[in-house]
Length: 137
Image (cartoon, rainbow, N blue to C red; front, side, top):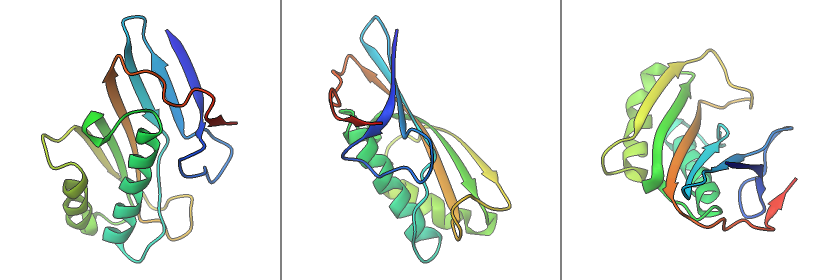
């Protein structure tokens, strides 16, 4: 098993001292991608959720993956009254069979004004590392 942690140069920059993606390559060729929680600026839950999933999509693409490869989502919301807005936008990005999911209410998130944070795990079968030489520390 090989683990690579870093920030794809084509993805959104982290807002702190952390890596955006951990790539775990198994001997059988399978790959798991663990993405750090993504937040986005925007006016309201729908706009922020759209920005979050666009960032997730960028990070996955940098590793030769897509939203269809997502197997787990963890969502943190500051306002559970807005969960329907979140789910509606999430369905735009993940229209098929939904991945496993956990949604938690939190009093606040690190970026000021953030309403939603999403982290995902994606699974791929034998995908070559598209980021070879493309990770920034």
